[in-house]
Image 1 (cartoon, rainbow, N blue to C red):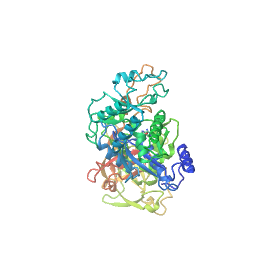
Image 2 (image 1 turned 135 degrees about the vertical axis):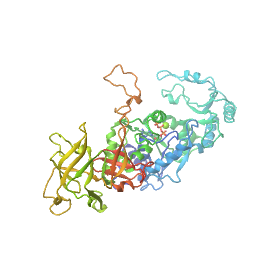
Image 3 (image 1 turned 90 degrees about the vertical axis):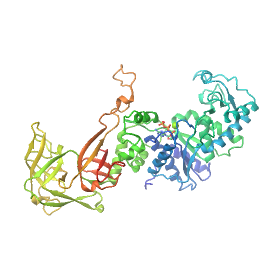
Image 4 (image 1 turned 90 degrees about the horizontal axis):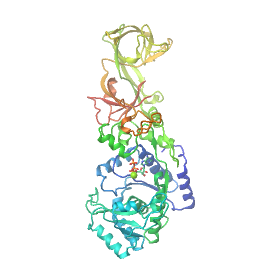
Length: 566
Ligand code: ATP
Ligand code: MG
């Protein structure tokens, strides 16, 4: 937690009110409820920081506060155990360890079933035997009421018997559903006798073949919240119209003695929308299975696994969550806000190193051939206590190709024929010539160094030059694969229509993929970078922030990813 007071928002105001009134005694209980049917993305990070963050903050005044990680695994078709492990890892990576507070909605299947029977016994639910088409045709529209099912008035006994037969596996998928008996004329479609259970003869990743009926989201979610004693159930705005149903189920079950008030309350907030990415599992799956990226942890993807490999930091996400805040109105956040948060965190915490991404040779013609000497480079300009490291200088160096120009524009302060620059942490040099091939491509630059100008020695500052370039010594620089990542999409709203092109009615978000989002270069790095641990993050001076690849980096074959530019 930071020292700063957490930013206030409408959900905090609601919770503060509940604390003042002691609505829930001395606790604030939230949950983060992912469905284990995919990998977590940046949008989930917002929800994680909100839910876990609130529980952490309120624990000071309400000691029993906690946040549960609940796997919302009530749909056997799309869910898999591998996602459960990946989600747990991602939550832990963001800094929250739910430890003993990991739950599975599937653990409540028996209790959920009992709640359904209670509703049947109270005349509040019935088995409907209409087929899918009939169900669709009788739902009505936004302006027209639905029609009551011909099965709506089945007796309690018949409903119970049918529901038990559903559970016993006596019916095929789609032949019957259990519905709440509410109001087919409700202006809210969600209240028109919504489904509670459906038949699905499918294997579940945790309960195996024990069940062939599965509860629907709207029923399972509120009941799970009540079972866990959740106080504030935070979800995204598209569930606003589901809230009356959430309240209906819990109020009825409380009347039937199944739950004791105070009951959990659902509060909606706006989901995270970001430019230049897609944040929907369906689209992310398309990117991965279509081979547009190299797997779920591709650094270009807005998944948390991808972010980690890209070098994004948990602290950067926390900063981002604070900065975007929590509100009720939909908004589109510019991707640069996220990048700025990562920069801010990395600028503060990443050690500095030198790498030359596009090397060209520089020969110091007046420097003795066999000589090498040490220059001292600070690990972090604002943290002198982090010390300095040695970089060795010799006659032959690598410099950045773009730092030398034969015929530069006026304000070019780097190296040019007859021009002077300082070799960062080293000497002032003067360009004396260069070699180029027949295409004008520079192959070598020549310069003379001034021995009286070494950085950090007395009098070295008396001569001033405008340019300051980075370099590495040819004799000890190490070759590295450098993966230069950029934004995955080249437009802010992938797949959106282009207003300036009326012909362009239907567009595919895949057409907006930025082909330049991944480039591989062979660069030169400081020797100490080669031996760093995977996932070590650095600022490469003048080049941006880079991370040693989580999977592919080794001392024998260093691999770095560009996290973000400076
Ligand atoms: P998707 O829309 O990508 O399929 P989802 O909503 O189906 O995501 P869940 O696993 O159901 O994913 O989400 C778990 C939690 O994360 C939910 O509480 C959901 O509201 C929240 N969440 C998902 N996407 C976002 C988002 N973009 N911004 C904020 N919260 C989100
Ligand atoms: Mg969902």
